[in-house]
Image (cartoon, rainbow, N blue to C red; front, side, top):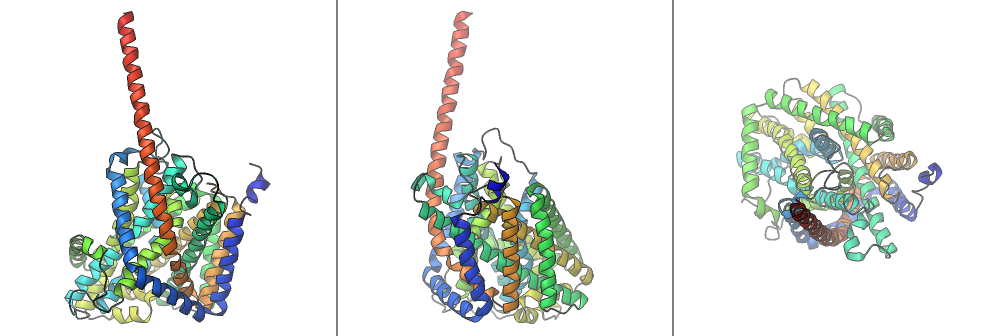
Length: 526
């Protein structure tokens, strides 16, 4: 393709409409953050209270659908054709899965969430007293559940749908193309553009707010370890450093920047987990993980469809429903990136890899770091709960400062947060480039620079104006209509897979009959 045409390929209606809407939200969040937060919270609150049941049922059905494809006769279908093989080794593939956005979330909430539940237990098991052994047990398995396979069900499905249509049906890597078996391959351009625009907006809002929250956590870590003032100058410096690193990474290409940084991420995460496991209360941590997984499995089905209409509580809206809405809104970004790196894997490998490996790493992380924090408050008299109540971004460092080698581990944690920050922004600019370049799997450097600059600027503006919460909540509102898109995509995917499988079996049967005829002819001629 001509270089000039490639550079201008993103100058289409999807880019400009998305850019304009995001710009308006950024202005709103910068100059009237309280109004944006209030309005977004009001709309989302109504959606969560009215359709919370729908999110629970929908995500639960996605889990069933994903596992059905994995373990059915379709599980052996290979993305990219029968002769295709994975481009990335298993460790690198899992590292890239974990680094594309939600690794940074696990680091942020790994201590903060279980300690929040420890201080304010969920209202389902009677009147559990805060800060007790019962509260600790409830806190651990609740955090496991909220960060388990449900959280990756939407990512898995969207990634699988895009992978299948991209590598088996030779469609574009766009969300709208996953519905072609239902809505047709031609026409309906306004509908297709609307779907892709929603995907772009949700991605930018989600990534910008996640980067903003991560910057605040790094700032808290620098203040805790080096007494660096947690002000706007520090936050600007973090964003500027992140921008330089992720621009260098994204311009170096998928097989260099993101690939190498993802390996560093997972390696550093493993070093931190092993270190805290053996430096901290090892036996308590292993017991907590074992019991927490047992409670998770025992309560899996009940918790999947649990609501709190009889208690008058909003816990389900505040935690599972909020998480599920967040993952649905983020599904285009994570799913498209996962699809891009998964050519050559079977449907079974894809589902098990995406929906099991990252959640398992997340559960172990929460078990080690959250379990250590619970042990410190429950048995050693610390007060990490209070630190979390004041500022969730300080949770990790409040825990680390109470164990041996805490300063060294805090420095490693800051490094991990920063590399996660870089890979999240890197993968986001790559995906946004594809979304706004008509599904081009190798978007130009110019479009990635544009989106990278916009995301970094948006995150910084909202940090300074305290508008992160409003934009984050606003991005969740799109999860409800987007779930309808995913429902249609599921029908389209199943329809195409069945037709593909039937055609493959027909061709295999024809080949078998041909070989039989050849054998008969050879026998007769001899």
